[in-house]
Image 1 (cartoon, each protein chain N blue to C red):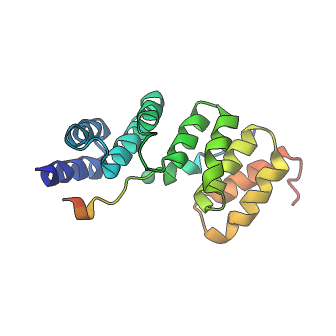
Image 2: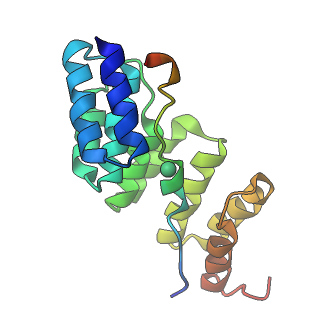
Length: 21
Length: 147
Ligand SMILES: [K+]
């Protein structure tokens, strides 16, 4: 079977905490 | 103060210390149970730790809050191979490139290759890294490798 990457994983991202610190 | 907890949380995230990030997010949530940033950080850190069940529980526990976690929920359901439920969770976010990307991965697993390829072709403008690999996989699986 052809290789399929889980590219969606790269879009599971943390929010910016810049203005919370 | 909560700012110190966020500084600590941020540091753990930068260092990919996701287990510690979950713990600090929990400390913040003890003080402010509805803090959206803390909830999002906790869910993402759990996913990065491969704790998909725990991520889903956290998402479910936050359902009453006005926070849209539908992409994360869809991603967790995809990881659990609950493909129809995953598609259902994406419905509220139709049209964004991230949603379309996950949708195409689900359609691939469902064997709906033409629909899968269709989305990848629409996404090609958005310059997502490695997208071509999945497009080729779809084409090969659909017997359309010559496209
Ligand atoms: K990432």
